[in-house]
Image 1: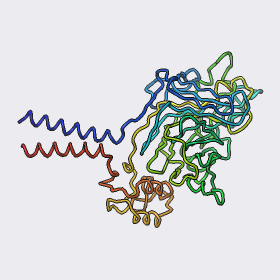
Image 2 (image 1 turned 45 degrees about the horizontal axis):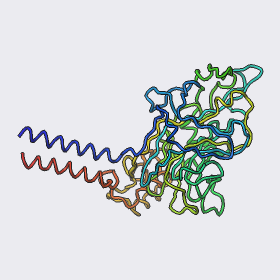
Image 3 (image 1 turned 180 degrees about the vertical axis):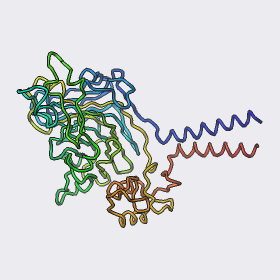
Image 4 (image 1 turned 60 degrees about the vertical axis):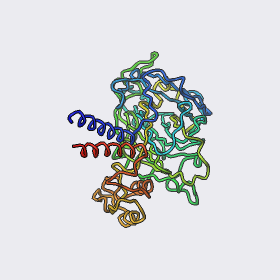
Length: 416
C-alpha cells in the first residue's frame, strides 16, 4: 500500500509540475556565453553597422546583466559610427519563427557618448547628462519580422520598439511596424488609420512624461567605464556624470515584448509602455522571427575618439517563452469567470482612475491601482476567455497534464 501511495503521489506531482511548466515553456534562449555568431543573420541598413555576438562588456566597465549570474558576455550593436548617414540595422537568430502567444524577454543596456569639457575634462559641464554630438541613437527590439530585412526608423517588416538612451529626442520612446515605418505618432496624426493601432500609455513619447520620470533614471556612469582606457583613449574624458530622469541610459533593464492574440505590449522593468494592435494592419508583417538592433535618427555622428568605444546597445539573456493571458493580469472585473462585454462596461464606467485607489471591480486589470489604457489592452487580449479563478483558458498541453494529475490523485483516493 505504501509503495502504491508513493507511486501515485509522485505521478500526480510530476504531472502538476509539467502542467505548470507548459505555461512558461521556453521556445528559444541565448545568453551569448559561447560564441553564437554563426547562428545570427545581420541585416544591413544604409549606414555602417557593427554586431559583436561575443562581446565582453566588462572591458567598457559595464557590470553583469541581471540574469547573467556574473557573466559579462553579450551582444553589442552599433551603427553610424563613421558614415554620418541616417539609418540603422537589425539582427535576427537565423531561421527562427514564433507563432501564437509568446513573450520575448531580454536584458538591455543603452550606452552613449558624453560631452567633452575642454576646460576641465571629467568634470564641469560635460559628461552624459546632456549627451554630445551623435549621442542620440535608438536601442531597438521587436518581433514578427522575416529575419532577413533591416528594421530601423524608416524601414520595417515587423513590429519593433525603440528608445533613446540620452533623452535627446522629442520622441524618446517609440513604436514602429510594417504599416508605420516612420513610427506611430502621439498625439495621433489626424486621419491616420495606422496611428489608431498604437497606444502610448504615458500619453507622451518624450522622457519628461510622468510614467518615464517615475520609473527610469537618473543613473550614474559606472566608475569602471569612467576609469577605462581603450586603445589609448581615456573614456573618462566623456564618460562621467549622471543621466536625466526618465531615460534608460547607463543601467541594465529587463525588457519584454509580449504578443497575446493581436495585441503586442512593450514593457521595461515590468512597466507597460506601448501597445500595438496588429489585427487590422494596413501592411502585413514579414514573418515570425525576433529582432534586435541599433539606429541613428540623425545624419551626423561624432569625431570624438571615444565615440566608437562607447556608442552602442547591449543585449543579453534572450528568452522566448509561451505566454498566456491571465496570470496576475485579470480582466474579469465582475468575477463571473468569463471576460466579456460586461467587463468592458465596468472598465468604461471606471475610466479613468489615476490616484492608485482602483480595485479589480473598478476595471483595474493589472493591479496597479489605476484604470487606464493598459487595463483596456489586457481586456482586449483576454476577451472571450473563461477564467477559472484568475487564469486564462489553459493551453491543451497544460490541460491534459492537469487532468492527468487529478486522475492520479482520484485513483489514489479510491485505492485508499
